[in-house]
Image (tube, rainbow, N blue to C red; front, side, top):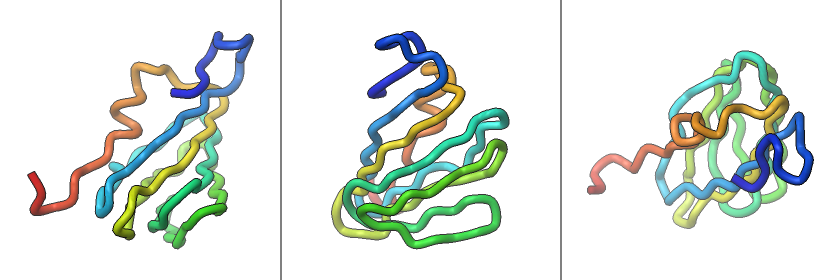
Length: 108
């Protein structure tokens, strides 16, 4: 978590730095009352927002409207790194559930 409600006077924004291992996938989830963006910093993958799938890579910005089911999968051989900004901020206790990555199948 780079920024959460109350840090530096922030009231309406949460920012996270997320790294996903090669082949990993974020669980599909949504935020009923929050807008969100993902900005891809490094790597490439596939992003799902509602019923749409989009290939993403360094420099891609994806907007996620409130309530839209979304997830991202790392399709590369390197880490997929992105910054997420959410407004209003979600509860930091939800971070593990929302940003947990599933390990690729066949790995232990």
